Structure formats: C-alpha cells, structure tokens
Amino acid sequence: MNYWRMAFRWGSQGFELWPTCRSKNVAAIGYFGYRMRPIVGDCSEVPVADFDNVWRRKWPENTTARVSLRRFIYEMKPGDIIYAKNGPRIVGRGKVVSEYLYDPAVMDDPDHPHDHYRRVEWNATFRPIPLKLGAEQWTVLPLNDSQLRSLGVAERTATARSRTMEAREGEVYRSEIQFRKRNSALIAAKKMHSDYRCEVCGMHYGERYGDTGRDYIVAHHLKPVGVRTRASVTRLSDIALVCSNCHDMLHRRIPPYSIELLRRLLKRSQRAELGAAEDS
Image 1 (cartoon, rainbow, N blue to C red):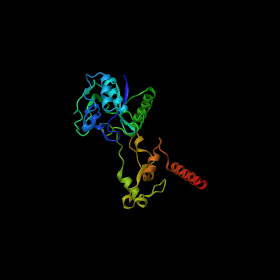
Image 2 (cartoon, one colour; image 1 turned 180 degrees about the horizontal axis):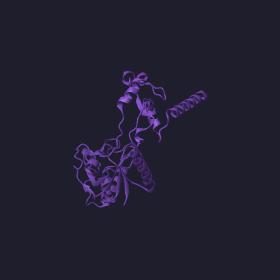
Image 3 (cartoon, rainbow, N blue to C red; image 1 turned 30 degrees about the vertical axis):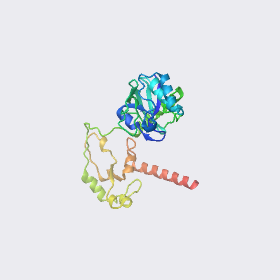
Image 4 (cartoon, rainbow, N blue to C red; image 1 turned 135 degrees about the horizontal axis):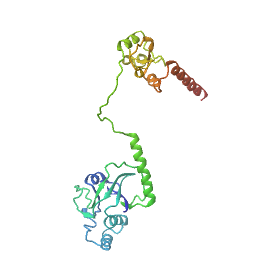
C-alpha cells in the first residue's frame, strides 16, 4: 500500500475541485491544451512508454505535470491512501477503491473537465490539518516515512483538539430524582427584610445591572436541605442571601464553605491582588 498527497486545483492557483471530488467520491486529474483538448486521452490500454512519448511530443516543457499524471495512472493502486491538499492544509483522506478510469464528463463541469479518475472512499470524519508536506509543485506526490509521521502526529492532534472543542449534547433521557421541598414563603420573607446585597462579597444586582438586576438575590441554606434525612424546621437565620458566583463557590466542597470562611478567603485574595499590583 502506498500513500499519496494530491491537489485538486484547476491550474496552479485556480478553481478548487476538491469539494466536487469529495461529493462524487472520486480523485480526478486532467491536463488540457489548445481549445481544451486533453494532452493525453484514455490510457487504459496505453503502455507507460507510449504515454511518455505522446506527452513529450505535445507538452515537452511540463515534466512535473507528466510525472503527476503518470503516477496517478500507472503507479496508484486500489487500497492506496490519498491525502487531499487544499492550499496550506490537508483537508481529506480516502482509500482508492478502483483501477484507473477515464471519463471526460466525470466532474459534470465543462469549464473544469478533469477526465482521468479513480473511485475513492473519502473519510467523512476527517479533520482538516494545517500542514505543508513540501514539493508544492507536484499535483500527485508519493509520501515518504518522514511525511507520514508528520501527518500522523497532526491527525492525532486535530482529533484530540476536536474532542475538547465539541461534544454531543441534547439527548433526551429519563432519570429518577429525589426533590427536597423548600419553603418559598420563608425565602420571600428573608428577601423582603434584606437589602438584596450579597453577604459574602457585597455585590448588589440592582447596582450592577440596573432594572434587570433589581430585587434579585440567591437564597443559600446554611443547613443544606439536600442532606437532611427527614423534614426539619428552617428559620430565617438559617438562610443567607448571596450572589450566584458566591453561591457556586460556597458549594465547591462538601460540606459547603461557611459564609464567614468564604468571606475571609475572598478578602485574602483581594489583598494579595492589591499587593501584586502595588509591587508592579
């Protein structure tokens, strides 16, 4: 099995044919001369020596194009792997699944008619890799061990990065959960007799967010309801009013931090930050 890097441009800086090749599950290549006549036609029955002779007669100055097409027709085999190149990136990987084929209409694009092709199973989950493998002038390039190692490292990195940047969410599932009843009237009474200021950091939603934050604060049970084995009495003094950030921090451990301890931790952090600013 051989590995290849292949570009799918019409001309060195021209129209990109990779999307069409991917959608049609092919790898295609073609070179045309005057009045869009192919330099060489169907080579299914043409020996490689005759191919070289025809090419040298029609387009002797372009050796790289001749070698690229010769590799595609005579050296590439079913089972080989193609890495698709698009500018400075590797954008696709696929397995060759057919012998050499010829069809001037394979691309369904009369303005960009690649005619030599092979059927390819392109990997639908391949992540593009920002990687140049050298020898940019070659349309069809055989990959050596060093280039394959670089590709392997880049593929693993791209896969790991994609796993940390995205995840599947939104599936519907059923779960049995125990809910603990909380007394909304008690919480409302606590808020009514407060100034709606966080008891840890002093933040006031109304001052920070205007009308949107008016009369908003989070109730925190000093004796967590969730760990009670049975119903028990909660008094106004058992409820603290805090902002949502401080509420999250209170519950960063089990059992939760006390209001006093979290307040001390916050002040200590603020003093350290102030000292660092003065030193700088």
